[in-house]
Structure formats: structure tokens, C-alpha cells
Amino acid sequence: MPAPRIVIATHNAHKTGEFRALLGEAWQVEDLHAFPDLPVPEEDGDSFAANAAIKARSAGLRLGEAVLVVADDSGLEVDALGGRPGIFSARYAGAGAGDAGNRELVLREMAGVPEGERQARFRCVLAVARGGVVVASFAGVVEGRLTEVASGAGGFGYDPIFVPEGEEATFGALPAEVKHRRSHRAQALAELLRWLEDAGLTKSA
Image 1 (spheres, helix red, strand yellow):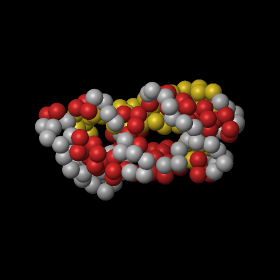
Image 2: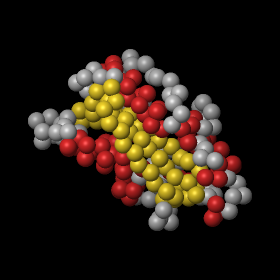
Image 3: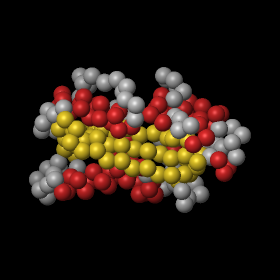
Image 4: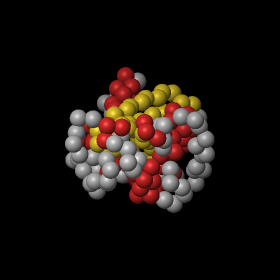
């Protein structure tokens, strides 16, 4: 019996890679690269949950009832910056700045902030849709602190400047298996997997 299919509503190959690693071989994971004609919706929500729902509904409406769509919206919240970059995490430094530009801007804004005031968190919300309807949503959060310089070549986004609570190294420097156990996305995905099992949508169903 073939593995059940999930489409992740993203063009971010790093994010898709994390989903594949976390879901394992029990699932056939695709992303929007497989559907180049699908329009990209404007993420004009005021929260991670709202933007995840926008992406899930948009892709789900066009892919139909037979396809389970999962949309992720996630980002970094820094207490000393009033919660920024928040929902603007992926584009914080402007169009074309990329991950490195976003990290550099945050570190510049945090220059001079003492270690005890560098608290931050990663937050993730997953929205699940069939057709154009969101049928479930799940959230995860990991607390931590920001470093003063980037460290580690692993992960993506803000991983090289974020040290999760209870660790001494950044997500960019920690082994992938540690991140996949501790991350905000892993927490939300664990809730999603429980929901899939309860709904009878697993491979064994």
C-alpha cells in the first residue's frame, strides 16, 4: 500500500526537508514546487494562525478534497524587540535579503542588549485543509535566547542565532536530530500526527 500523500503549502525547500525528516517514510511529502500553476496568496493575516489558514485554504481549494494540505506559518519573536520580527520573520529585512539579511538585521537591532534580556522564542502554527476548508490547526513553541553572533551552518532562517532553552548551542550548531526533537515545528507536527492517527488517515488505515 503506498504511503499517504501530504502537500505542504510552501516553496521553501528547507521547510519541506524538515517535514520530510519529521514525518518519515510513512508519508509521501510534496510541496508547491510540484504545482507551479498554483497562485501564491497574499499573507495579510495578523497572526501566524491567520496566515497559515490563508495558505492552507488557497492550496486546498485548488488541489481538491482528495489532497490533504498542511500549511505552516512560523517565526521568531524577540521580547526586547516587542515581539518582532514575528509574522514578518521571513521578510524582515526586505525583499531579497534572505535568511542572512534577516539575521543580520535582528542582531544589529539587538546590539548592546545584555544576555539576561535576550529572551526569544520560535512559534509555529500548522493549518490542515481539505478542499477550501481548514479542518484542524496545531501550534508549537520553543523558548530560548538570542546569541550575539551567528553560530552553526545547520538549519535555516534564524536557527544560527537562537539557543533553545536547556541547550548551550544554537539550532544551527546542534545535531539535526536534536532540533527535530525540540523545535516548534516538531511540537506542532507531533500534534498533527496524533490527529491524523485519530482520524484514521495513517498508512495503516
